[in-house]
Length: 485
Image (tube, rainbow, N blue to C red; front, side, top):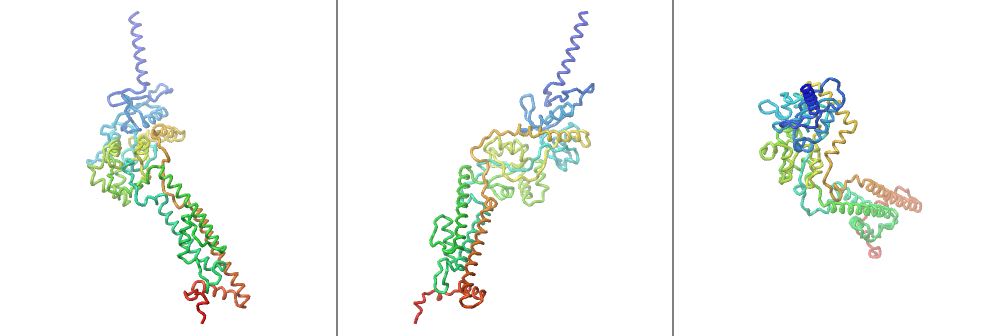
């Protein structure tokens, strides 16, 4: 009886241990990590156990002692709970994502799926047409692109001789110059046309020549207020509008220049991939045999082709084996790493001396890979959509992309564009047009009164007045007393 009791106890303990191993958190088995996803009733049917391959990359999958953690592990756990399956996670043996080798075989995680060494690949694996021919992808769980990761001190430029022009963009400075010349021209025209400004064109000197008008505009632009000031209503309208424009322009310049000084850095000299190709101080590269490398290889964009040729000729020197190596090289040398923008944002958030250039090309997404024709592809795609609709994907992104770098002052700075001052330019244009129209009205009124006195047509008098005002000779402006016999 005692032996039967001992046997019953042993059997019960064995069953409890088996049950506990299936529902345990994570169990290290060599280089594999197992975990259960069947937490709620599944009846008498045991859940299927899937072999999942991934790659070590922060924050997608990271080793913490005997455990794995990261975005992809949390995503996999959520999918396992939704679809009721167990899984065993292994790290890809060759440490690659997956590319077609010269022998016609696939490497990395893609190769393990093709060879049926794993059933799922949950990792930052880019959805590509070449890969989709041999494996199946789910709906993307993260959207990304291709960006440039730089070190701030390597990307920053020394103070330039014309750094004082930085607060405005080239387009804005061009607009200011055009506005200045147009205003001076309108002031010159108004001073010539208005009889209140120039009563006797045959004998009186006009103070507002074109050169004087240029000097008046420049003086107003620097708040000097040179004399003489316009006497006619038309000239005063133009002058007032120009003063309003210059005050607003100077306020915007001072504010943006102050923001530039407070930001502690000038605009990055490398804003785009074209800037990266044109410079020679910083080397650049990407992960060998990666989707990013293939993107530049297959692109027909001339700039992208130049980037590919540069990396291909120096592949032994500029290409790196994995993402971690690329980031370390940026931190330790004069190197720019081309890779997934969403991963670069994480590195810029965690390393205060790193920054990602503004331009992002090649919009793409990360998907879960399965064997070609696997029924899990549709199930996982639907589950990913549900996680996106419920906000779980956003929660995971915020959890693992949380920044630890708190910057002082504004995060970004850029030169002021013409669009930011579009209303000011519009008001100036309306004021100039109004001033010229008022000058024409003033000249028309004088011509009408003169025509009534001299019994001539108003049009002929108006034409004669304009002829005197714009075709006057130097001798005609001399004092009449000097030409008497």
